[in-house]
Each structure stands twice: as C-alpha cells, then as structure tokens.
Image (tube, rainbow, N blue to C red):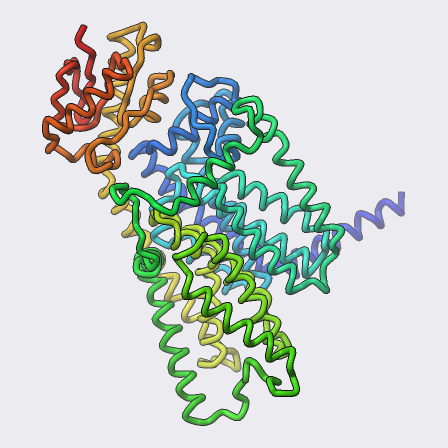
Length: 573
C-alpha cells in the first residue's frame, strides 16, 4: 500500500512540475482558444443567418450518403473526409444544415490550437499567441470561416501534420505515424493538399541524420491503411478505386480553359496583387514594418561595412570544385524555374523549386543559421500551394487560406528579428515585442469587430436567396406530392436537392457563365439566352425548372409560382 502511495505522490509531483513548467504556455493557449472560439461562434451565427452556399449543400448531401440516409443527390467526386465527420453527427439524429457551420468552426479552432503548438517549436508563448491570432483573423480567413467549405478544415489537418513532423524530428520518430496520418486526413479533406508531400520530404531530407526511417515507413503504412475504406467505397460506386483522384488530377492539369469561365484568371501574380486584402490592415502593417526594418538594416550594414557580413556561399574557390558545381546547378535551376514558371506542367515547377531549396540548404548549412530547417519547411509549405494556384488558370481568393499559416509564421519571424535588433529596455528586459504585440492585438480586435458585420451586410442577398429557395421548395412539395417522380432541373441544384430531399439535375449556364449570385442580379436575358435554357430543358425532358435567373422567356414552360429570386417553371403539356 505504501508503494502505491509513493507512486501516487510521484504522479502528483510530476503533474505539478509539468503545470509549473508550462504554466505560461497553458495560459496563452487557453486565452487564444477562448478568443478564437468567440470569434468563430460570432461568425457561425452570421453564417446561419446567411444560410449555406451550394458547395456546402453538396458536402451535406454527401454526409447524408455516408450516414446511410441519402436522398438521391450527391457529389461523391468531392474529397470525403469533411462530409464523413459531418455524417457522424447525422448518425446521432441531428440533421440540419447548421451542422456544417459548427463542424467547420470546430475544426478551425482545432487548427489554431495546432498552429500555436507548431509556432511554439520556434517562438516563445507571446510570439506564438500573436501568430495564431494573426492567422485566425486574416480577412480572407474570416470571410470563409464557418461557411461550410473544406478549405479551413484541410488547413487545420495540415497544421497538425507539420507539428507532428517537427516533433518526429526533434523529439521522437514515432510521431511520424501521426504526421503521415494527419497528412492523409488533409488530403482526404481537400485533394490538392497532397502538395504538402513536398515540404514534408524536404524537411525529412534536410534532417535525415536525426530521423528513424523505419518509423517513416510505419507512418506511411498507417496513412495507407486510413485510405483503404475509401478505395473500397470508390470501387463499389465507380468501379475504379482511384476514379475521383484521376478526375481531380485531370481538372488540375487543364492547359487551356475557356476565358468565359467566371474564375478564369491567367494572371500568375493574382495572389501577390491581392495580398494586402488577404492579410488585412494588421498584416499589412507588419509587412510594412518588417520591410522598412530590413531595408534600413541592410543599408546600415553596407554603410558601416560590417565586419561580420555573411557570405552565403562561403568557401567557393577553384579548389572547391564540388561546391562550385552545386552553385552552378543552383543558378541554372533558378533561371529555368523563373523562365518556365507558367509555361510547363505545374508538377515540374514544384519539383524544380524543391530541388532549388534543397541545394540552397546544402550550400548554406555550414553557416549554421538558427532555425534554418524550420524556415525552409514553412517556406516550402507556402510555395507548394503558391506555385500550384498561381499556375492553375482557375483561381479563387479563398485558395490563399492554404498559404495563410506560413505567412503568419514569417510575419512573427520578421517581428522577432526586428525586436532583437531594435531594443526598448525596461529593467534590463527587452519589451519591444510585447509593445508591438499589444499594439497589433488592439488593431486585430478593432478590425475584426468592424469586419464581421460587413461580411453579413455584403452577403445580404445570399440570405434572401436562400430563404426564397427554401420557401419555393416547401411550396412545391405541397403543390405536387409526386414531384420526386418528375425530372427537375435547377440553377442552384445542390440547394434545391437538400430542401426537396431528392435528386435535382444541374442546369448549365448559358449567359456569360454567371455564378449563382451574379445570376440573381441579372435582368438582361434576351430571347436567344432564354431559348438556350428552354431547349436544354425540353431536350432533357425536364418537367420543372427552378430558376434564379430573372427575365427569362421560356416558350415551352409556364411560370407557376415566384418567391423573390426564385421562379418555378412547369412544362406546358
């Protein structure tokens, strides 16, 4: 009994020691979690009022299929994991479109917690807190938070992937099992998250002396076991275990895309040009501060001819032939990469870039720059997605969210370096960063408080349109109790499929390929446009056409009811 008491005492002491050692980290993490949870809940309430968008309804419909309660409509070519998580709640009996908002928000908070832990491997508690808060309040993140897209969920799994990867290198190689498992979760949430394989293996390669390759193989095996149920599901549904992946890759490899598509944007500088809007006022202030600091610092080094100036490629000489060859290869690869950036298959650009980064590391590793391997990992993370989305001709602002965590990392990195060189001392302690943190946190709170109401105001038409779709669906179920046996086409088919609980067919776009929310503003359809919708409906034997396009004159159909933006057309017998 005394031995048991001793064990209990030792356990209590170890817990006390752990709490004392990590007290500050726990406080900052709890504070960050509470703040972000409040912001997330506020954003979810706004989204509940606005209602889901079409993509969200597709994830919801897939979740019904996974829960064994499908209504006939689904899009199972989409990555399944986000819908699978939602389906777990559906299985408990709570089926509502609001579920997707809470799942999206919960996974986002989970990701912010992971980012704090990841930043802690490099920064102190306050710096990590500010980094997590920055990421959580970027305007591009707030805009898409809680909407019910899979992007932020995928980012959250990616964050935890890199956290476990760093632990596997720094602490214990067994963490590779979790790292590769979470990488698979990220991939199954959003297929192009497969690009993280480049920075993952780059980080492993530059730390090859610190890792156990046996555990890497075990981790890869664990991740493959996770995907087996999906492969079986794909075989049963499509007759091909990798069909959805092939479909995604074919869509991602488009070289020529119609310029009429709404999101057709060939500009490779798209994300750079819109960068200030993505990171907001607080992010732009940080970038401005850091850029000014770097310019002034380099200028002072040049003027003073600093004796400790670092030559990145120190040791190059006629006698050092191997290093000279590596430098030549490095320069050649950089020229090829820049010259071919948007002219060849994106995967070749990805491979070129990571070859360049590894050569850079190999040429500079003897300088022993602090945290060089982490800096390279985060830079590789950013560039993996930047290269792909800059080259890919279909662009959307929300794709920047995949690059947002490394952007927050480098913002904190810049502020830390600035604080270490421009010191404001108080009682022999440098308080430059704490002062900056207070200033930036205040700006973040003010900008977030003013930005979230704008999200609701600027999307008011979405709220109205969703209510119209819901009312129109309710009316049709009463008007025609046999509607499920009829062929129905709709402009916003995922929305109608959810409310009508049946398969609704998609109506193609025949006027400038407008998106849904552009369509509901359009009153300028001519008869030629109307004929295109009419003829397609007749050719496909549509009995009803549920339209959000104003001003159509369908010869073969009669409008039988209108709810705001929505007009219900019935075929003339």
